[in-house]
Image 1 (cartoon, helix red, strand yellow):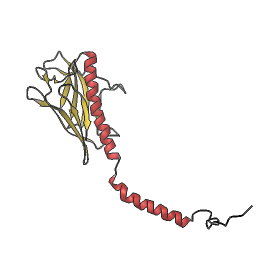
Image 2 (cartoon, rainbow, N blue to C red):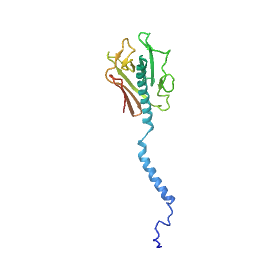
Image 3 (cartoon, rainbow, N blue to C red):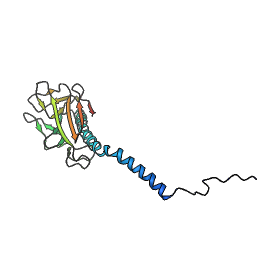
Image 4 (cartoon, rainbow, N blue to C red):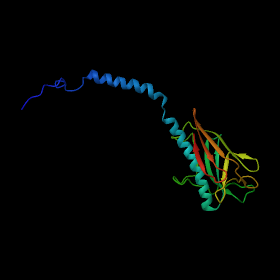
Length: 191
C-alpha cells in the first residue's frame, strides 16, 4: 500500500492557547461594540405592562357580556395601576361595588395591578389614559356594557366611547400604546 505524503498539519494536534485567546478576544470586542445598544429587559418589562392593561380591558369586556352587568377598568396615572371592578347600580350615580370585588381569572385575587409593585413591570409608568365619550366628557376609566360595547357608566347616563380610547405606557425612552375601538371594544397593542 502506498503511503501518502505527511500533511503539514499532522504534527499539529490542535490550536494553541494563544490562538484560542486571540479568537476569544476578537469575539469579545465585537460583542462589546454591538450589544450595548441592545437592552432586551427594557422592552420586555414594558410589554408585560401593556399585556396587563390589554388583559384587564379584555377581561372586563368578556365578563360584562358573560354576566350581563357593567364592568369598569380604571387605569390610574397617579397610582400607576389598573383595576377592574363591578358597579353598585343601586347608588346614584353608580359607584364601585366594594362588597363584591372582581377576581383576577388566574390568581383569583382582587383584580388590580400596580406596575411599581410588579417585579416584571418595575419602572414602567402609565403616561396617559384617555377615553372620550359621546357627551364630550373624558375619563381615565372605561366601562363595558352587557353587549360588550365600551361606555362611560359612572355618569348619570351611560355614554358610548367616541373615537379610539388610548392608554400609553413608558419605560425610559420606550413607549407602547393600548387602543380600544369605539364601535367594537376591540383592544389592540402598538409601539
